[in-house]
Length: 248
Image 1 (tube, one colour):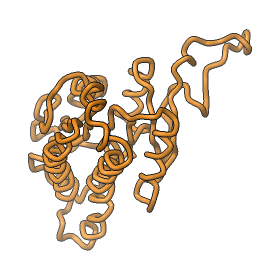
Image 2 (image 1 turned 90 degrees about the vertical axis):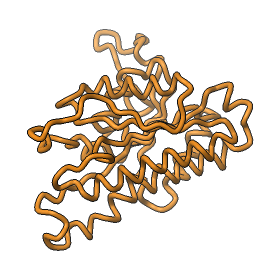
Image 3 (image 1 turned 45 degrees about the vertical axis):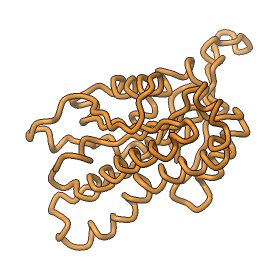
């Protein structure tokens, strides 16, 4: 299950791996450009002919994850559809920069709740609800299936970039949430890690970031926050993390 599935990273992940995973794609408005229960490929010369690309359809769920009860609804729909969730990718993000700083008017104060709600509280709620509804009593199966969480953080969570105070603080909180989740969920065999990419696709390809998720899913690491791509130079700061506006 991946949130922010209609954004930059979510769309690339779905397009790259929908034949390898049964994907629950959670998105607010835009859907990923892959076959789903909502849309599929048709051969215009033979509309009734089966198209191989439709064999692995993505299951799309539209949701405003900041609304009360929406995370729980998504978890229940995913479990009803597939009976399990082996990988949770918390990718949905909110970013609103304050280029003049946090003391320039009330913009930063008004943006505190949106940043921490989507970037921290929603990943926390997804992790907790999946554990409560499915993982906590299935330790043997969790370990056998190598079940895990990958939180999509950012290099902003550990570095200082002008205008990104709230976004950076929320990603730093997500990093620490990841470490603590890994410690708690080890009891029933579910791993938790985060990736902290630099700006994509400007400094690292989105495909490489998506691949990092898959690599973490396939190994046995837990409690880590892993960088993806080179650290941006000062000249690149203006471009840093523009992707996040699209990953809701």
